[in-house]
Length: 364
Image (cartoon, rainbow, N blue to C red; front, side, top):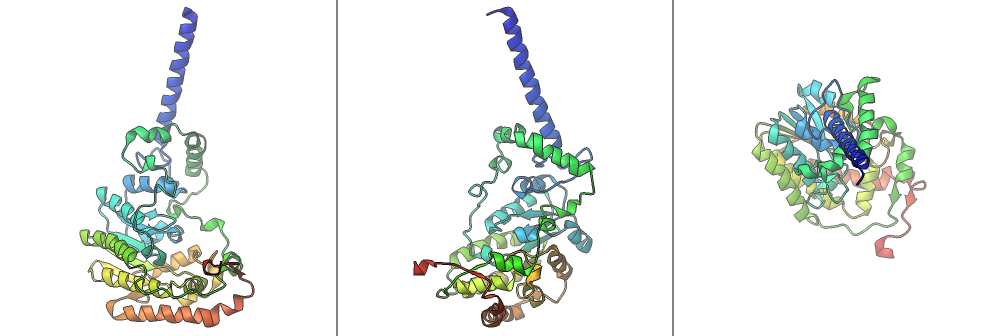
C-alpha cells in the first residue's frame, strides 16, 4: 500500500474519531434529554418531549415534589404548586396515565430524592387498565430508561439530537422568556370551545349492557396495590390524590359503553383503600358542574384548559372538594346521578350535531 494513501487513511480515521468525540462531548455537555445531569452553563430546563425527557428529569433534577398523572396534568405550571405548598416540583407524566408507568416514575424519584409532596391525578380509566409497564410497547426510547451505558450511543450519536434538539434547547434558554414551570405543556397551542368537543366526539349509536360493578376487579386491585405500596413505604410524604373534571360528554360515552357502574365502583374502592392512610388527602373534581357542563373549557371530551388546571391547584388543600370516609357513598351517588342527568338532559341539545358511530361490534 502506498505510504501517502496510508497517511491519508490514517488522517481520515483520526478526523472521523475527532468528529465523533466532538459530537459525543456536545451531547453530554448540553444533554437536552437530561440523561446525565440537570441543566448547566446557564441553560434552562426546556421540557417539551416527555417520553424522552421525563425520566431524565426524575433522575437528575433537584426537587421535593412530584406532579403525577396523564396528559391532563401537563398544563399545570409547576410554580403554582411551588408557591402554594412551598416546594420545588417537577412533572412525572404519561399520555396514557397507566398506573404502572406512573408508579415506576414515583419509585425512581424516591431512589435519590426525599419527597415532601406527591400530587397524583387518578384517571378513572387508569384503574381499569392493564397493570403493567407500557413504555416499550408505546415506542419510548428505552436507551434512556434502562441502565445500560452501551446503548447510549443511540443518544450520543443521534442526528436529530445534534441538529434539532440541542439548537432548540439553546435557543429557548437564551432567546425570549421561556417559563420552566410550563414543562411539557401543550395548552398554549390548542383551542378550547364546545365546537371542538362536539366535532371530535363520536357517539355510540346504541347503549351496551351495563357491566357488573366488579368487571375490572383484578385490574383495579392490582393498580390500587401499586399506588398503596408507595403510600405505605413513605409516610414522610403527603399525598394529594384527585379525580380530574372530564366533560359531561365523557360521561355519555362511559354510560353508553356500559362502563358506568364499574368505573364508579373502581373509584370507590380506590378512594377507600388510600384514604385510610394519615398521609393521604383525596379530592374529587369529577362532577364539578361549573367546570364539566361548560364545554368551552375543553378541546375534547377529556382535556381541559390550563385555567381549569390552575383552579384545581387553588382548591387542593381546602375543604370544598375533599372526600372523607363519611362522604364516599355521596361521591358515588353523585357520579351516578350526574351520568343519568347527562343522558336525560345535558346531552340532548347536542345529539343532532354529534357524529354517531356507524356500527357497534354488537350490531356488526
